[in-house]
Image (tube, rainbow, N blue to C red; front, side, top):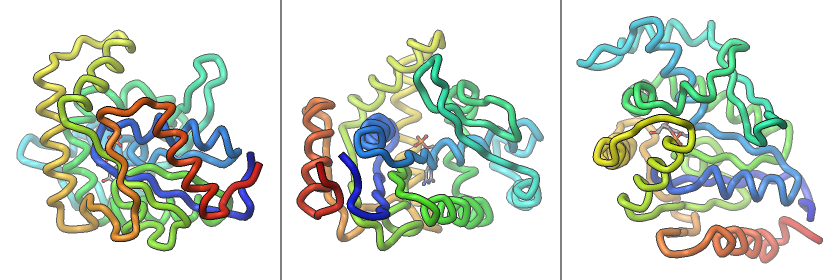
Amino acid sequence: MKTTRNIVIAVDGHSSCGKSTVAKEIAKAIGIAYIDTGAMYRAVTLAALRQGLVAPSGPDEAAIAALLPSIVITFDFDKALGRNTTYLNGENVEDEIRAMPVSQSVSAVSAIPAVRLKLTEWQRQMGERQSVIMDGRDIGTAVFPNADLKIFMTARPEVRAQRRFDEMVAKGQQPVFDDVLANVVERDRQDSTRALNPLRKADDAVELDNSDISRQEQYDFILNLLAQRGLIEK
Ligand code: DC
């Protein structure tokens, strides 16, 4: 399968509902780049935490804005582990950006306007050069309002917390289920109520609730949409 032209697919939705899993599968099937914008917000959050710029009372917005020019985020595919890897200024931070300290601060850091503006700019540059499937919270509403296909994914909070919990256990972490659930619910709240580009379904996005459907069903659903719109061919 291949695309009929340069295309942009936006996959937005709640945290831990499997956006990245399906986006990676689609990217591989149709031969386009996958970009995990959550990893970019997580990498900036890690950089801010390391500099001591995230106090319990909230992040230091001005200092984090000043830190942005020194941050370089890159992605690579780790063939040995069969997964994407995120680098912060050349350092592999893939595991650290998924652990609880970053998960607990990322919504607050990603609400900072200077952070959103900078990452939106980087994301647009990535999508201008090549066909992409990009997952995040504001791709269809703010980054690529003219995306060729917009999917808005969701699932029940308990289902999402269980998936995140299983992922953390598989990585050797020792999470507490109620903490993971509380984090999922709190991130939804913060992501949907921030002032700049909050999480919301774009008017022209197709909604996909995957609480009770299989990975294969959601994969087929998206491929069918792409085919119906003439964006891919055999
Ligand atoms: O997809 P994720 O859970 O790894 O994203 C981490 C956080 O980053 C999420 O809670 C909100 C923020 N984010 C965002 O504000 N905009 C995006 N496009 C992607 C993520």
